[in-house]
Image: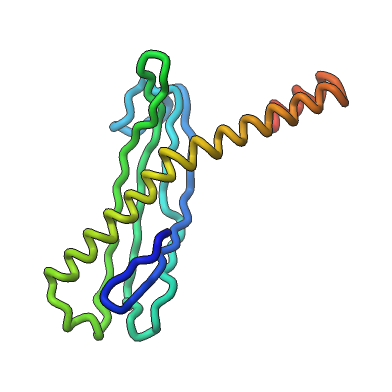
Length: 161
């Protein structure tokens, strides 16, 4: 993620996400329409705060991100829609107790906004681009197999992907 900067400090929040795909309306979250063909669920599994000196590291720091992304058809186009919930909680390190609450509140809002914009960019730009590359590579691989080994290998590849 983009580094977080506050006063003279700079830190990186590293978040590892689990993505799970659901189809055919089975076990869809309540905010997803049942007509959506596929739903991608997102949830944090690990997180790390990097780049701070030990005296600035909060004794307790938690990041939670949970959300859904699904395609919605509009005429001949598919758009990605989604819902994202984020929370960050921490115990203020002793050196930051001198900073007024309203300043820390503003910083927290800026951090959350920055994180959500980065996740939104990933969902709107990076994820579709990665999926398009995956489909193209899979198509090339399937085509090569059909020329080299015949239809049995193609069927095996389709089952395994």
